[in-house]
Amino acid sequence: MKRLLVTVMLVVIASSALAAASVVPRKNGAESRAQAKSATTSAGVVERRVPNQNTPSLTPSRAPVNALRGAGVVVRGSTVKSAKFRELAKELDTSGLLKDLADGLNEVFVLRQNLGLRFTECGEPNAYYDPETREVSVCFELIEDYYESMADTYDTEDELDDAVAGAFLFVFFHEIGHALIDLLDVPITGREEDAADQLSVWMLVDGEDGDKAVLDAAISFYSGDASEATIDEGDYADEHALNQQRFYNMVCWVYGSDPDGYADLVSDGNLPEARAERCENEYSQLDRSWSKLLEGHLQ
Image (cartoon, rainbow, N blue to C red; front, top):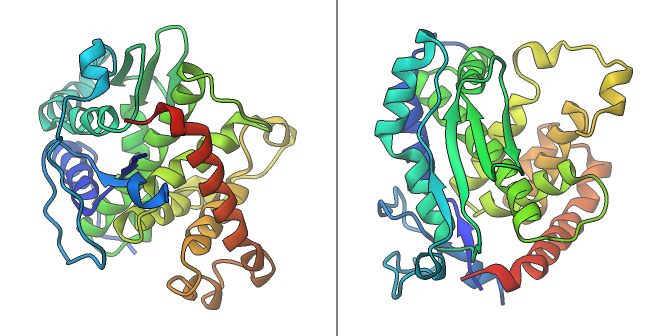
């Protein structure tokens, strides 16, 4: 059983691609588990630090099942409606970011239908899975919004690039979660949005930069206008949890994956002690559940 591991280089790929493509003016401002952690980016992985465990081979020993069946994750061309995002679309397409992500997913999941990935202009910051077209779309406006809303949270442009990459990856895998629930007919209880959040964290958490990606994504729920937004009846009725709840859930699950390593999340006041006491069990249940639900659908 294998699971997608977002390695150091995958975060770097996303960060570099988004930074190079960004047209947003930026400013300096403030036993299944071991197998599941296989790195799968076709671009290759160059670690910036030596991991504690043996690094798995990144060279496929056989063709992915998806390739043999002619189905899998495929990249669609960007769709642009206005001149504003034309250059960004060109840069993102050239970067190969979606192809790297598609190749990684195809090395992990067995799909019997194609799942499309594309960047698109939406008219609002958003990302979504369309079950009719079987496509995950990430809006240019969402990337633009991340750069604008998170700019004051980080001191350097490099830090901002990494943070935007983390937020992008979390949302991307959240939408992949919706797609897998649909295409694989994964049984879930409760809100699908909560399940997709859990799956995204499960796919990202790796004890290294994947954890940081989740924490940066959590911060995005408190950045910019989100930090000052008032809550109304529509928010309570929405299919998504409140931004504040999603923040604490994500911080809790990262902490729960390694309570000793992330003790500072509690001591620094980012996670209340009362919630922290439950996080290790929460993450253990999340890990066990998704491992079980997906075990018949992995390469």
